[in-house]
Image 1 (cartoon, rainbow, N blue to C red):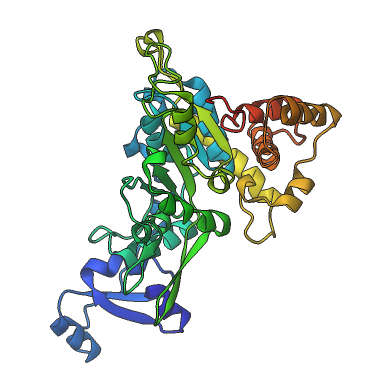
Image 2: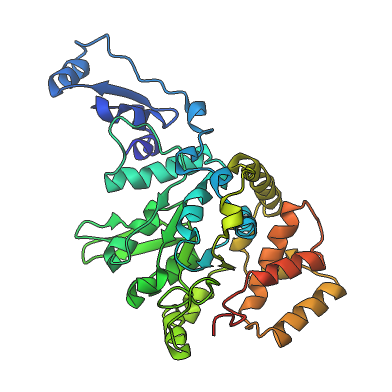
Length: 389
Protein backbone atom coordinates (compact mmCIF):
# COMPACT_ATOMS: atom_id res chain seq x y z
CA UNK A 1 0.00 0.00 0.00
CA UNK A 2 2.83 2.39 0.86
CA UNK A 3 4.54 1.67 -2.46
CA UNK A 4 1.30 2.37 -4.34
CA UNK A 5 0.79 5.61 -2.37
CA UNK A 6 4.25 6.78 -3.42
CA UNK A 7 3.64 5.66 -7.01
CA UNK A 8 0.53 7.89 -7.16
CA UNK A 9 2.48 10.94 -6.01
CA UNK A 10 0.91 11.16 -2.53
CA UNK A 11 3.38 12.60 -0.03
CA UNK A 12 2.42 10.72 3.11
CA UNK A 13 0.04 8.38 4.91
CA UNK A 14 -1.47 7.89 8.35
CA UNK A 15 -1.74 4.30 9.57
CA UNK A 16 -1.73 2.13 12.73
CA UNK A 17 1.47 2.20 14.73
CA UNK A 18 1.91 -1.58 14.37
CA UNK A 19 2.28 -1.14 10.59
CA UNK A 20 4.47 1.95 10.81
CA UNK A 21 7.90 0.32 10.50
CA UNK A 22 6.83 -1.73 7.49
CA UNK A 23 5.49 1.28 5.57
CA UNK A 24 8.44 3.50 6.59
CA UNK A 25 10.78 1.24 4.61
CA UNK A 26 9.46 2.96 1.45
CA UNK A 27 11.80 5.87 0.78
CA UNK A 28 10.34 9.29 -0.11
CA UNK A 29 7.12 8.80 1.85
CA UNK A 30 6.16 10.47 5.15
CA UNK A 31 4.63 7.82 7.41
CA UNK A 32 2.66 8.98 10.47
CA UNK A 33 1.88 6.12 12.89
CA UNK A 34 -1.07 6.59 15.26
CA UNK A 35 -2.57 4.51 18.07
CA UNK A 36 -6.26 5.41 17.62
CA UNK A 37 -8.76 6.98 15.23
CA UNK A 38 -9.03 9.90 17.65
CA UNK A 39 -5.30 10.57 17.29
CA UNK A 40 -5.59 10.32 13.50
CA UNK A 41 -8.50 12.81 13.43
CA UNK A 42 -6.60 15.24 15.65
CA UNK A 43 -3.57 15.07 13.34
CA UNK A 44 -5.65 15.63 10.20
CA UNK A 45 -7.36 18.59 11.88
CA UNK A 46 -3.99 20.10 12.77
CA UNK A 47 -4.48 19.58 16.51
CA UNK A 48 -1.78 16.90 17.03
CA UNK A 49 1.37 18.81 16.15
CA UNK A 50 3.76 16.51 18.03
CA UNK A 51 3.25 13.63 15.56
CA UNK A 52 6.34 13.35 13.33
CA UNK A 53 7.10 11.00 10.42
CA UNK A 54 8.69 7.69 11.37
CA UNK A 55 12.29 7.33 10.16
CA UNK A 56 13.91 3.94 9.45
CA UNK A 57 17.54 3.13 8.63
CA UNK A 58 17.32 0.61 5.78
CA UNK A 59 21.01 -0.29 5.96
CA UNK A 60 20.54 -2.40 9.08
CA UNK A 61 18.21 -4.76 7.21
CA UNK A 62 20.53 -5.67 4.32
CA UNK A 63 23.23 -7.61 6.15
CA UNK A 64 21.32 -10.26 8.07
CA UNK A 65 21.69 -13.93 7.20
CA UNK A 66 19.98 -17.22 7.94
CA UNK A 67 22.15 -18.16 10.92
CA UNK A 68 19.13 -19.36 12.89
CA UNK A 69 18.67 -22.22 10.42
CA UNK A 70 22.00 -23.79 11.31
CA UNK A 71 25.51 -23.86 9.93
CA UNK A 72 27.22 -26.27 7.54
CA UNK A 73 30.05 -26.44 10.07
CA UNK A 74 27.75 -28.62 12.21
CA UNK A 75 27.26 -31.23 9.46
CA UNK A 76 29.49 -34.29 9.74
CA UNK A 77 30.67 -35.83 6.48
CA UNK A 78 28.71 -35.40 3.24
CA UNK A 79 31.44 -33.21 1.70
CA UNK A 80 30.38 -34.12 -1.84
CA UNK A 81 26.79 -33.15 -1.08
CA UNK A 82 27.86 -29.84 0.45
CA UNK A 83 29.86 -29.10 -2.68
CA UNK A 84 26.80 -29.83 -4.84
CA UNK A 85 24.65 -27.53 -2.71
CA UNK A 86 27.30 -24.81 -3.07
CA UNK A 87 27.11 -25.19 -6.85
CA UNK A 88 23.32 -25.02 -6.70
CA UNK A 89 23.37 -21.87 -4.57
CA UNK A 90 25.98 -20.21 -6.80
CA UNK A 91 23.88 -20.61 -9.95
CA UNK A 92 20.35 -20.63 -8.43
CA UNK A 93 19.90 -24.17 -9.75
CA UNK A 94 16.99 -26.35 -8.66
CA UNK A 95 18.11 -29.43 -6.71
CA UNK A 96 16.84 -32.91 -5.92
CA UNK A 97 18.55 -35.07 -3.26
CA UNK A 98 18.17 -38.85 -3.29
CA UNK A 99 19.25 -40.95 -0.31
CA UNK A 100 18.15 -43.34 2.45
CA UNK A 101 16.34 -42.13 5.59
CA UNK A 102 18.69 -40.56 8.12
CA UNK A 103 21.33 -39.54 5.59
CA UNK A 104 20.79 -35.86 6.38
CA UNK A 105 18.81 -34.63 3.37
CA UNK A 106 16.45 -32.44 5.39
CA UNK A 107 19.20 -31.10 7.63
CA UNK A 108 21.30 -30.10 4.63
CA UNK A 109 18.33 -28.47 2.87
CA UNK A 110 17.54 -26.32 5.92
CA UNK A 111 21.10 -25.01 5.91
CA UNK A 112 21.03 -24.06 2.24
CA UNK A 113 19.59 -20.52 2.74
CA UNK A 114 22.60 -19.74 4.94
CA UNK A 115 24.96 -20.00 1.95
CA UNK A 116 22.79 -18.00 -0.46
CA UNK A 117 23.86 -14.40 -1.18
CA UNK A 118 22.51 -11.81 1.29
CA UNK A 119 19.03 -10.52 0.50
CA UNK A 120 19.34 -7.14 -1.24
CA UNK A 121 17.08 -4.29 -0.19
CA UNK A 122 14.94 -4.34 -3.36
CA UNK A 123 14.60 -8.12 -3.05
CA UNK A 124 13.65 -7.72 0.61
CA UNK A 125 11.04 -5.11 -0.26
CA UNK A 126 9.47 -7.37 -2.90
CA UNK A 127 9.45 -10.34 -0.53
CA UNK A 128 7.92 -8.21 2.23
CA UNK A 129 5.06 -7.18 -0.06
CA UNK A 130 4.10 -10.83 -0.60
CA UNK A 131 4.28 -11.73 3.10
CA UNK A 132 2.30 -8.60 3.98
CA UNK A 133 -0.47 -9.46 1.51
CA UNK A 134 -0.57 -12.99 2.95
CA UNK A 135 -0.92 -11.56 6.46
CA UNK A 136 2.06 -13.49 7.86
CA UNK A 137 4.43 -10.58 8.50
CA UNK A 138 5.19 -10.55 12.26
CA UNK A 139 3.58 -7.73 14.27
CA UNK A 140 5.57 -4.49 14.30
CA UNK A 141 7.99 -5.96 11.71
CA UNK A 142 9.62 -3.60 9.23
CA UNK A 143 10.78 -5.91 6.48
CA UNK A 144 11.62 -9.52 5.61
CA UNK A 145 15.40 -9.37 5.97
CA UNK A 146 16.30 -13.04 5.50
CA UNK A 147 15.63 -15.32 2.56
CA UNK A 148 12.40 -17.33 3.00
CA UNK A 149 12.53 -21.06 3.58
CA UNK A 150 9.17 -22.77 3.09
CA UNK A 151 8.63 -26.48 3.65
CA UNK A 152 4.98 -27.50 3.05
CA UNK A 153 3.70 -30.94 4.02
CA UNK A 154 3.13 -33.48 1.25
CA UNK A 155 -0.65 -33.33 1.83
CA UNK A 156 -0.76 -29.72 0.58
CA UNK A 157 -3.42 -28.83 -1.99
CA UNK A 158 -3.06 -27.09 -5.34
CA UNK A 159 -4.46 -23.80 -4.09
CA UNK A 160 -2.27 -23.78 -0.98
CA UNK A 161 0.82 -24.33 -3.11
CA UNK A 162 0.19 -21.84 -5.93
CA UNK A 163 -2.29 -19.53 -4.18
CA UNK A 164 -6.03 -19.12 -4.36
CA UNK A 165 -9.23 -18.28 -2.49
CA UNK A 166 -12.18 -16.04 -3.36
CA UNK A 167 -9.82 -13.12 -2.75
CA UNK A 168 -6.62 -14.63 -4.22
CA UNK A 169 -3.85 -14.94 -1.68
CA UNK A 170 -0.24 -15.97 -2.42
CA UNK A 171 0.63 -19.64 -1.99
CA UNK A 172 3.79 -21.37 -0.82
CA UNK A 173 5.62 -20.82 -4.12
CA UNK A 174 5.16 -17.04 -3.85
CA UNK A 175 6.00 -17.02 -0.13
CA UNK A 176 9.28 -18.69 -1.20
CA UNK A 177 10.09 -15.81 -3.59
CA UNK A 178 13.84 -15.00 -3.47
CA UNK A 179 14.28 -17.97 -1.16
CA UNK A 180 13.91 -21.76 -1.04
CA UNK A 181 10.88 -24.00 -1.49
CA UNK A 182 11.72 -27.38 0.07
CA UNK A 183 9.60 -30.40 -0.81
CA UNK A 184 10.53 -33.32 1.43
CA UNK A 185 9.48 -36.87 0.44
CA UNK A 186 8.76 -35.63 -3.09
CA UNK A 187 7.01 -38.78 -4.44
CA UNK A 188 4.46 -38.51 -1.62
CA UNK A 189 3.05 -35.27 -3.07
CA UNK A 190 0.00 -35.71 -5.30
CA UNK A 191 0.98 -35.73 -8.98
CA UNK A 192 -1.45 -32.93 -9.85
CA UNK A 193 0.14 -30.77 -7.13
CA UNK A 194 3.63 -31.34 -8.52
CA UNK A 195 2.53 -30.58 -12.09
CA UNK A 196 1.34 -27.07 -11.17
CA UNK A 197 4.96 -26.25 -10.31
CA UNK A 198 6.03 -26.45 -13.94
CA UNK A 199 4.76 -23.06 -15.13
CA UNK A 200 6.07 -21.01 -12.15
CA UNK A 201 9.46 -22.74 -12.41
CA UNK A 202 9.63 -21.74 -16.08
CA UNK A 203 8.23 -18.18 -15.84
CA UNK A 204 9.11 -16.99 -12.32
CA UNK A 205 5.55 -15.90 -11.54
CA UNK A 206 2.08 -17.36 -11.08
CA UNK A 207 -1.27 -15.92 -12.20
CA UNK A 208 -4.41 -16.73 -10.19
CA UNK A 209 -7.64 -16.13 -12.13
CA UNK A 210 -11.10 -15.77 -10.62
CA UNK A 211 -14.42 -14.70 -12.16
CA UNK A 212 -14.03 -11.08 -11.05
CA UNK A 213 -10.29 -10.55 -11.09
CA UNK A 214 -6.89 -11.94 -11.98
CA UNK A 215 -3.82 -11.53 -9.74
CA UNK A 216 -0.19 -12.19 -10.61
CA UNK A 217 2.30 -12.94 -7.85
CA UNK A 218 6.08 -13.34 -8.30
CA UNK A 219 7.45 -16.83 -7.71
CA UNK A 220 11.18 -16.81 -8.40
CA UNK A 221 12.46 -19.44 -6.00
CA UNK A 222 14.98 -22.26 -5.71
CA UNK A 223 13.22 -25.61 -5.70
CA UNK A 224 14.93 -28.12 -3.41
CA UNK A 225 13.50 -31.64 -3.21
CA UNK A 226 14.38 -34.73 -1.20
CA UNK A 227 13.34 -38.33 -1.74
CA UNK A 228 14.24 -41.90 -0.88
CA UNK A 229 15.72 -44.09 -3.65
CA UNK A 230 12.91 -46.64 -3.28
CA UNK A 231 9.67 -47.17 -1.31
CA UNK A 232 11.43 -48.77 1.68
CA UNK A 233 14.28 -46.25 1.47
CA UNK A 234 17.21 -48.68 1.77
CA UNK A 235 18.15 -49.35 -1.87
CA UNK A 236 21.44 -47.40 -1.61
CA UNK A 237 22.05 -48.06 2.10
CA UNK A 238 25.10 -50.39 2.49
CA UNK A 239 24.05 -51.49 5.98
CA UNK A 240 20.37 -52.31 5.39
CA UNK A 241 18.77 -54.67 2.89
CA UNK A 242 16.25 -53.30 0.41
CA UNK A 243 12.96 -55.22 0.24
CA UNK A 244 11.73 -53.58 -2.97
CA UNK A 245 11.44 -55.38 -6.31
CA UNK A 246 12.80 -53.64 -9.44
CA UNK A 247 9.34 -52.76 -10.77
CA UNK A 248 8.45 -51.18 -7.38
CA UNK A 249 11.52 -48.95 -7.57
CA UNK A 250 10.70 -48.02 -11.17
CA UNK A 251 7.09 -47.16 -10.27
CA UNK A 252 8.25 -45.11 -7.28
CA UNK A 253 10.72 -43.05 -9.33
CA UNK A 254 8.27 -42.44 -12.18
CA UNK A 255 6.01 -40.52 -9.79
CA UNK A 256 8.30 -37.61 -10.68
CA UNK A 257 7.31 -36.66 -14.22
CA UNK A 258 9.84 -36.01 -16.94
CA UNK A 259 8.76 -32.36 -17.50
CA UNK A 260 9.21 -31.57 -13.80
CA UNK A 261 12.54 -33.40 -13.61
CA UNK A 262 13.55 -31.46 -16.73
CA UNK A 263 13.46 -28.28 -14.65
CA UNK A 264 15.81 -29.63 -11.97
CA UNK A 265 19.48 -29.10 -12.79
CA UNK A 266 21.22 -31.02 -10.00
CA UNK A 267 20.46 -34.61 -9.00
CA UNK A 268 22.48 -35.36 -5.87
CA UNK A 269 22.97 -38.80 -4.34
CA UNK A 270 23.14 -38.50 -0.53
CA UNK A 271 24.75 -41.62 0.99
CA UNK A 272 24.31 -42.80 4.57
CA UNK A 273 26.87 -41.21 6.90
CA UNK A 274 29.55 -43.60 8.14
CA UNK A 275 30.36 -43.91 11.84
CA UNK A 276 33.93 -42.65 11.30
CA UNK A 277 32.57 -39.38 9.93
CA UNK A 278 30.00 -39.00 12.71
CA UNK A 279 32.64 -39.55 15.39
CA UNK A 280 35.17 -37.21 13.80
CA UNK A 281 36.28 -34.22 15.89
CA UNK A 282 37.26 -32.18 12.85
CA UNK A 283 35.06 -29.16 12.13
CA UNK A 284 33.66 -28.64 8.66
CA UNK A 285 33.77 -25.44 6.64
CA UNK A 286 31.34 -22.81 7.89
CA UNK A 287 28.36 -21.50 5.95
CA UNK A 288 29.91 -18.02 6.04
CA UNK A 289 33.00 -19.16 4.10
CA UNK A 290 30.89 -20.99 1.55
CA UNK A 291 28.60 -17.97 1.18
CA UNK A 292 31.59 -15.78 0.30
CA UNK A 293 32.37 -17.99 -2.71
CA UNK A 294 28.71 -18.17 -3.72
CA UNK A 295 28.35 -14.39 -3.55
CA UNK A 296 31.49 -13.89 -5.65
CA UNK A 297 30.12 -16.28 -8.31
CA UNK A 298 26.76 -14.49 -8.34
CA UNK A 299 28.55 -11.16 -8.84
CA UNK A 300 30.31 -12.61 -11.89
CA UNK A 301 26.95 -13.68 -13.30
CA UNK A 302 25.38 -10.30 -12.59
CA UNK A 303 28.15 -8.62 -14.58
CA UNK A 304 27.84 -11.16 -17.41
CA UNK A 305 24.07 -10.74 -17.77
CA UNK A 306 23.90 -6.99 -17.17
CA UNK A 307 21.29 -5.42 -19.42
CA UNK A 308 19.48 -8.70 -20.15
CA UNK A 309 15.96 -8.66 -18.77
CA UNK A 310 14.98 -11.64 -16.62
CA UNK A 311 18.52 -13.07 -16.59
CA UNK A 312 20.11 -12.94 -13.14
CA UNK A 313 21.82 -16.30 -12.60
CA UNK A 314 23.07 -19.21 -14.70
CA UNK A 315 19.91 -21.23 -14.03
CA UNK A 316 17.89 -18.56 -15.89
CA UNK A 317 19.75 -19.09 -19.18
CA UNK A 318 17.78 -20.24 -22.22
CA UNK A 319 19.21 -22.12 -25.22
CA UNK A 320 20.46 -19.00 -27.01
CA UNK A 321 22.18 -17.79 -23.82
CA UNK A 322 23.82 -21.19 -23.33
CA UNK A 323 25.25 -21.04 -26.85
CA UNK A 324 26.69 -17.61 -26.11
CA UNK A 325 28.02 -18.04 -22.59
CA UNK A 326 28.75 -21.78 -22.33
CA UNK A 327 31.19 -22.40 -25.14
CA UNK A 328 33.53 -25.36 -24.63
CA UNK A 329 36.70 -26.58 -26.32
CA UNK A 330 37.21 -29.81 -28.28
CA UNK A 331 38.20 -31.81 -25.21
CA UNK A 332 35.05 -30.72 -23.41
CA UNK A 333 32.94 -31.51 -26.47
CA UNK A 334 34.35 -35.05 -26.62
CA UNK A 335 33.66 -35.58 -22.91
CA UNK A 336 30.09 -34.39 -23.28
CA UNK A 337 29.58 -36.61 -26.33
CA UNK A 338 30.82 -39.63 -24.37
CA UNK A 339 28.43 -38.80 -21.52
CA UNK A 340 25.48 -38.61 -23.89
CA UNK A 341 26.25 -41.90 -25.65
CA UNK A 342 27.88 -44.19 -23.05
CA UNK A 343 26.44 -43.11 -19.69
CA UNK A 344 22.84 -43.10 -20.86
CA UNK A 345 22.31 -39.36 -20.33
CA UNK A 346 19.11 -38.00 -21.85
CA UNK A 347 19.04 -35.20 -24.40
CA UNK A 348 17.33 -32.93 -21.89
CA UNK A 349 20.40 -33.20 -19.67
CA UNK A 350 22.67 -31.55 -22.26
CA UNK A 351 21.70 -27.93 -21.51
CA UNK A 352 21.60 -28.64 -17.77
CA UNK A 353 25.16 -29.96 -17.80
CA UNK A 354 26.42 -26.87 -19.63
CA UNK A 355 24.63 -24.47 -17.25
CA UNK A 356 25.97 -26.26 -14.18
CA UNK A 357 29.46 -26.41 -15.71
CA UNK A 358 29.29 -22.63 -16.23
CA UNK A 359 28.48 -22.21 -12.53
CA UNK A 360 31.33 -24.51 -11.47
CA UNK A 361 33.69 -22.45 -13.61
CA UNK A 362 32.36 -19.25 -12.00
CA UNK A 363 33.07 -20.64 -8.52
CA UNK A 364 36.69 -21.05 -9.62
CA UNK A 365 36.67 -17.63 -11.34
CA UNK A 366 37.47 -19.38 -14.64
CA UNK A 367 36.57 -17.56 -17.84
CA UNK A 368 36.53 -20.72 -19.99
CA UNK A 369 34.59 -23.91 -19.21
CA UNK A 370 37.17 -26.70 -18.96
CA UNK A 371 36.72 -30.50 -19.13
CA UNK A 372 36.98 -30.83 -15.34
CA UNK A 373 34.01 -28.48 -14.95
CA UNK A 374 31.96 -30.58 -17.37
CA UNK A 375 33.06 -33.79 -15.63
CA UNK A 376 31.79 -32.53 -12.27
CA UNK A 377 28.52 -31.33 -13.81
CA UNK A 378 27.91 -34.81 -15.30
CA UNK A 379 28.10 -36.30 -11.80
CA UNK A 380 25.05 -34.24 -10.85
CA UNK A 381 22.73 -36.04 -13.30
CA UNK A 382 22.05 -39.13 -11.18
CA UNK A 383 18.50 -39.74 -12.35
CA UNK A 384 19.46 -39.35 -16.02
CA UNK A 385 22.14 -42.02 -15.57
CA UNK A 386 19.54 -44.54 -14.36
CA UNK A 387 21.56 -45.28 -11.23
CA UNK A 388 18.60 -46.67 -9.31
CA UNK A 389 16.98 -48.91 -11.90
